[in-house]
Length: 385
Image (tube, helix red, strand yellow):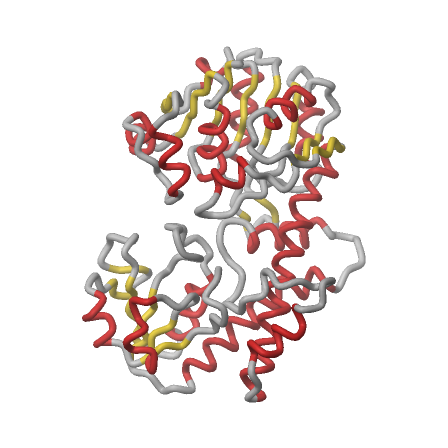
């Protein structure tokens, strides 16, 4: 089939490369540098498996071109939908503009939305543009492992009212390496699945972080407590390594969006999950300040290893709290090439960084700073993401 993908982020690009294994795929983006790199078979995100797949891919890349896309059998939308705190909802401007342009050009085939959206958004589009066959297909991808997760999905969820949606689920099933369950549901149910899944993960992160806060304040061994709790098979030994808070592309914005969707619906837990992340950052900052540092070094801005994503990383929240107390903060981040990060000096040399820092904070421990372990503050217990 002829497939066009809008958005060359980790969702759009990993999907495009996967689909190009069996189909004629073109990826669109508004960033000319991204397009130039992709046409040279150079990945624009850090994902080793994706980089190797791209080298062998027949994927085409172009600056966003609605005229070209109207020839597609399927259009897949994976543009950013960041949470807008002023509107208390996702900013779906990019999706709206593309769909409006497609309708204006008379497009009547399938549009698969893989961006995360509010509950009810796809139905609203379907009502507004009845000639287009909309499908919402939530993604469950991890940063740095997006291509692997596309090949080995936990499930495929299709939200639609159209019989043609089975073509999409079959298309993905033919491409995956590991068979998985397929769930066909309504538009809003699929949207809710995405938001509730990520909010549950955020809740789990928050639970073990609050366990760690308790152990740290009371002088108890966090690792022993987590081990004993996680041996219960109903709880399990996963997603339980303490951190500075949940962050990244999905969890902060998805939890806030789900809470916004609870308007006029009774709840306590969803609010608590959102608030718990701020409380955790307050606690971490407080523990660092107790060391009375003059200079705090931030080792890595990224959310996890093998990632170049800084967006909404929890450590940035810690930085803001420390700087608000008048403490100098410096940063070591190999993937960041500017001299300043939000007015904090970026130190390019790791040895200079370690020498300058009174306290080094890191969300995840690394061999680079093992030699100055006495300076390091981290809540990383198992050295796993």
